[in-house]
Length: 231
Ligand SMILES: Nc1ncnc2c1ncn2[C@@H]1O[C@H](COP(=O)(O)OP(=O)(O)OP(=O)(O)O)[C@@H](O)[C@H]1O
Image (cartoon, rainbow, N blue to C red; front, side, top):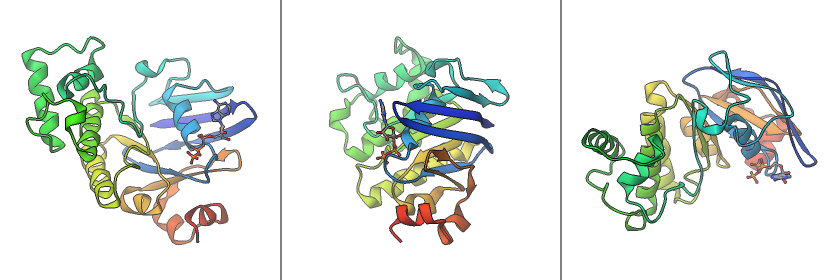
C-alpha cells in the first residue's frame, strides 16, 4: 500500500502537503487546476523530488531516501521516454537491465509483452516506424516488463486523439491494474477519470486531498473540482 505520511513538498514558493494512503489495486486519477501540483506530487512519490518533511512508504517500507530506480515504482510520461535510435526490443530490454542485454530468454519475454499490448512482431522496429498509438503501446510494454507494483502515469496519452486515448486507458487498466498493480494517473480530462478511475485525488490550494471514490466525486464535484471540470 502507498502511504504518504505528513508529506511536505516545496518547490521555490510552491508548497504541497499530503497525508493519506491509497488502497492496493486502486486506479487513482490525480486531478486539479493547472499549476496545482499534480506532476509535483508524482515526482515526489517517484523520488525525483525530495520532500521537505514526511515519508513516502510502500507496504510499510520507507522509500523516502531511495533513488527512483530503487523504488517499486515505474512512471510513464507524455513523451514515452523511448530512445529513438534503438529498436523497440532494445528499448524494452533497457527497462529491466541498464545494459539492455538481449539473450534468448529475454527476447521471448519481450515478445510476450509486445503481444499483450498488440505489437506482435514489431520488436525490431525503431520508434519512428511506429504510429503514435503504437509508441504508447511500446511504452506501456516497457512498464509491464519492469513489473513494479505502483505505476504512475503523467498524461502519457494526452497527445493521442480521444478515441485512441480511451483505447490506451482501457489497455492500461487491463494489463496493469488487471494484475493487481496500483495506478495513479494525472489527467485533465474528466472522461478519462470517469472511464477507468476508482478514486480521485484532488490537488488544489497547496494540498493533495485523500483519495475519494470517483463516482460520487464526479457526480457532485466540490467547488475546486467543478471549476476544473468547467461546470
Ligand atoms: N523547478 C521548479 N521550481 C520552482 N517551482 C516549480 C518548479 N517546477 C514547477 N514549479 C511550480 O510548482 C507548481 C506545481 O507545478 P506542477 O507542474 O506540479 O502543476 P500541475 O498541477 O501538474 O500543472 P499542469 O496541470 O499545468 O500540468 C507550479 O506553480 C509551478 O510553477
